Image (cartoon, rainbow, N blue to C red):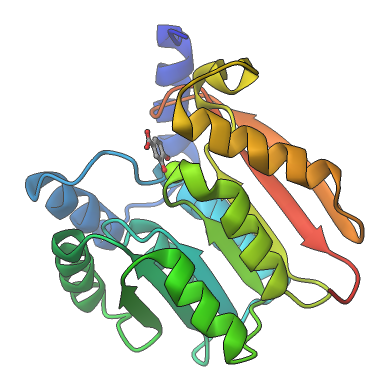
Length: 224
Ligand code: DHB
Ligand code: MG
């Protein structure tokens, strides 16, 4: 679906109206682009949305599934108190190298623990170790969206907030017969959501610099 120019201009207008100069995140965006990473990081307004959720929940332990260049990890780490901790995963070694350099340059490397490898393996280890997280941002390969939500719920405690990115994908997710693996992954996640008890759920559709997409929000209310 093609976005109107108005929607993209509006995003830029909201950005200059609501956000302050952010040399740290700007630098990460610039270096990620220069290193040829895919332009799939959250937008500045979305990064601040995540940061606000971190502050609202008072999260001290966050999990990010899908680090890419470290843009959202740094945005979230910055929103945490000094004892905050973020575990973030990246499957691609070269991408992880760029992310680690970005994280180091941001000054938040103490709070951000970047694990290189398939997210499901990293998450399985966390489950086995009995870890829990206060906040989870799911933003890796959409093929595994449902699997990541399942793991996030295993790592949750009552009060944990989980955000899943890219649940609309320009409306492609509407196609029940889609052969696109990412669309199928998102639809599996949404079908799984229907079966959940003890979780409050909603979604936001988004338009702007990254096109038409959306985020699902989950808040765990009962012991898993
Ligand atoms: C894609 C992935 C993302 O995480 C995103 O925010 C946008 C697009 C993609 O794989 O197409
Ligand atoms: Mg995303």
